[in-house]
Length: 309
Length: 309
Image 1 (cartoon, rainbow over the protein chains, first blue to last red):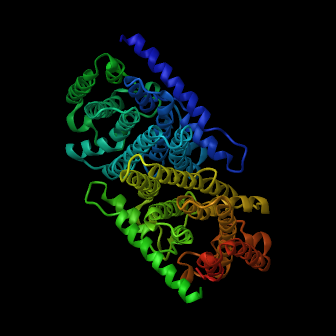
Image 2 (image 1 turned 30 degrees about the vertical axis):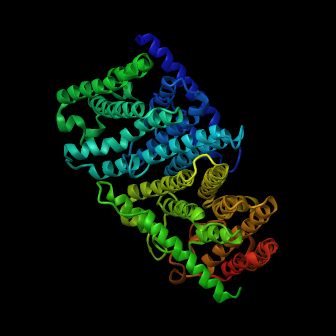
């Protein structure tokens, strides 16, 4: 797969996700209508849609049914978006810009931004549950339909664990506590494994489970996703040093301003770039086990190394 | 059932819930350990445990298996607790006391209080999913086990809807927007139906579904819970006027201080008390359909009218 074919595929899946998110979270003319506006403001603000695209790409590896995976892909993007809204709050990272626009609380106020985050997390589970119930309706008591329902519940559990205290929220707590402190390399890795890594693994593994991956396939995908997650974070830290508001859509050099420990502050820029290449190479090694079926995910790893936002 | 027997039963179920919550959310000696402390601080702060007791009481009506219902009961209490933590934040109700102790953000700071709330909502789904997966393990492809799994997924969906934008969060948005305004009776009812009522209906209906309630039983329980929810809120508003920090464990007269519209400000104290008796009577009417099996829930409605905190 060449870069151009990869980009076409990526755009196609990104559009599919955007269309589905647009359909799932609609504005309503009810007394609580502002919550829908606030949810949509952040959810429909663009972004790479990396996580849901990972879900769909893994489904494609197995030749699975996209309609089984899309609700889970969208749920993960909702969870990701809620985490950004809460992270940006004054009592957390206190960021004014996100994806080139004022952050949610700058537009809707802190109270509603907190509730919009809560609502997106809650809604993620609502849509996954809707899909599971839908899967049970065709043939209520066939063992095939039962197996599919169970695979989806397992996928939901993978996602819930990834977004909880042993995943994303745990990483965010460590991040919050580390601000202004010099943390060691071990804690830095621990923090990112949870804060960013968990929600990059979740789409890969939940999709693999829904599509009925074999154990060795699951393990290779897990290793791929782990390395991809680390690469993603190292690149983020590098971009915070080398990027600008113009390319990034958010304030850069903010890590330094907040005295945050990053891969760059701990390892230096050159070593961070070496590490980035190393873990990207690892990710590629594991995805090459899938041969041609893994081409898109291989290109994706290379794409993330070379991104400038 | 006399009052003494009722109290014994209530205490028994309350203890069962407390023990289970204590077991489910444990402190861990990991880098994110403060999140577990913050979650436990609010979750284990006592309280009436009304919602989980309702779950268990409905299970008892059907002679159901408590172990099937307890995780859902605990999940609802976690969701209730998260909503209190977020409601108390400076950008929401800005309350300093809750259940006789400083509010979560007063102890752990705003950032961690927000994350502790997020974590409790997330964890609620994790434990329900654990239970569903557990139910599937005994006999993977029997239609009986499939039916039970589906009932539990439906219960989870009831709970997720109740805590989302069309339930609790929606009500909280209306509450946030109404502060300092004179709202009409219609909007007041709408707000409470969602903010408080939804999460009082959820334990009743989710438990009924898990225990396989018939349609007319379900409908009667729904009407019971709706009236109970309204009664609960009217009583809350009356207590805010007539109570004290000593009996309530939180600052009273706070509605007036915040210029909040309540049943008392809209209907006056006497009319509110009349309405309280009326809706309590309605709740009792619907639960009397269950005869002796409904005795506890009938006493519970009377108990809530007479409570002083």
